[in-house]
Length: 277
Figure 1 (cartoon, rainbow, N blue to C red):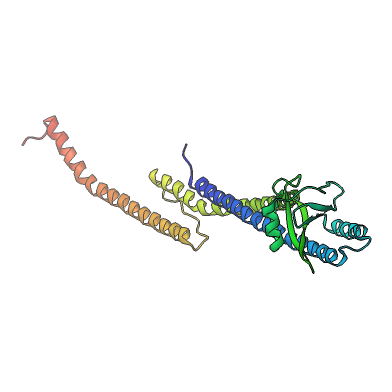
Figure 2 (cartoon, rainbow, N blue to C red):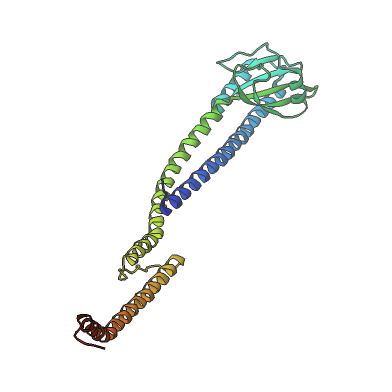
């Protein structure tokens, strides 16, 4: 099936647009994911450090557990995260979650070794310690006796997927509007660009039939407009040449008509035997 220049150019433009939108969407989701992780890391780190400071100050005092429950409850309500406190050997001694109770579970040694030295973060389950995939930050608890444990602030990774899904919906809505507008603009631009070429093709067919009266409308100053002007000039030259050819043939026919008539008359007389040589 033959494809016109209009369909080729229009299809190419739309294809490039779709590829660009896919690349843009991928990059945007990547940046959105990094932004979410950085924002959550900052939030969880601040939350864990707040708990660390409170634990360090209140460690060993009476009413410590009730005081920590209030602190952790306030923080978790604000951020929607969970707080776990692990001793230096990795045993979770406090789980400030109403949904999951991790008290008594043990954090793997390799993770504790890293978290006791410096701030720790990962996307995972603490090697199976947590019940669901989460993004977590661990901050060591510093005390006069040394580093006595780690506070883990945890938030489900489902929040990232929900955030990315919302961003994707927003991007798709904006993309749909852009695609429709670009679709209309490219269609009109392509039709306007191809129109003179179609007119030239029709004018060429008319010239083949001997009609040299067709002219291309020139309403642009780009390369296509220059081509239309050149085509019109060519048509005028061919029309003038054709007119001269017809005039020449008419003149020759007229000039030859009288002697030919005379010759034909003599030939007829001779043929009838009227005249003798």
